[in-house]
Length: 410
Image 1 (cartoon, helix red, strand yellow):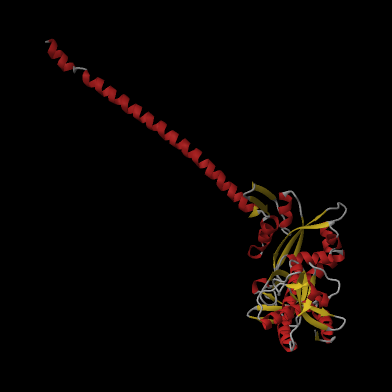
Image 2 (image 1 turned 180 degrees about the vertical axis):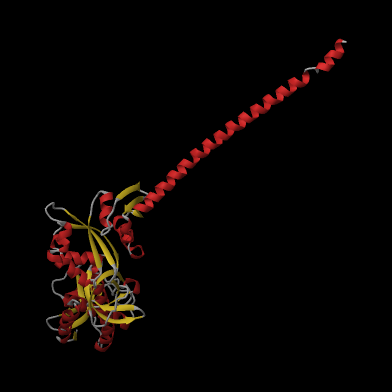
């Protein structure tokens, strides 16, 4: 046995407190290192009956080989005679197993070098697994971090035991990320690597809005108010559709809060991003009207509603057209993402012109048909007159002249 003292156990307990690696994992790593060093020292490649045992009471560790007690020894590496076994233990019988210490002399230095390498490797693996498990559980949730630095347009955010990466596409356009500032981010993905896991976070994800509403609105956390859909263009505007499972609770009012206190907290967290809270409805017409707020809607015509297409024509007053469409089409685009309906918006005057054009196009073929019919009748009358005139001329030519008749009589 090799005396290692109590310093090892103290170091294991300290690592467990600081890094969360259990004492049992470190002791198991030390024992595995001892076995690996013994096999290398004795030039043994395959052996399943070798193990290292650590006595926590005495602070000693040794390498032992398990052998089967038999009458006739055929394999000395795995078997031991009964007489030899009785020298080790007094109450053994044939068929029992005994552990024989095989720790070489001057094995401490060799074991220490091997143990150092194995334990270091195991500690790294244990840390990686702990971090991986921790952030796998955090995947799809909101967490708070501290901005560390900006590298190649990526923002590095410390979220505890690891530095996460926020790619440029997951950042809010125009936002300045100052090192040292605290920030709430959404854990998008966790990738396992040979070293520490790589965590990807987002500051522009729509689920951030959901998490903030769940934190600020107790009715949402309790399940009374339900968030049906969210569409967001980070840094500019967000639309959120809510529904109340309790008829006595106003879903929109619950999200706004007394004097707008709840919504103001969320808007401040999102750096004054505009938020439209709309009431969800199972009726697509009502849902589309709500989604296009703050614009007023005159009518909604459902053009297609099946598994392949959801198309609607929306008519708004002339003075509401630009508001309904939004800057660069933002309002109608967010309404489309929120409802899942393809929305075509026209003003009242545009619809009147379109209907008038369709009416003219419908009347023109009828008028043309009447003109063609009149022309055909006129042509027919002309042809009949010409035919009658030709017949009369033929009859006139067939009658003899009066002078010729007189000559004939004479």
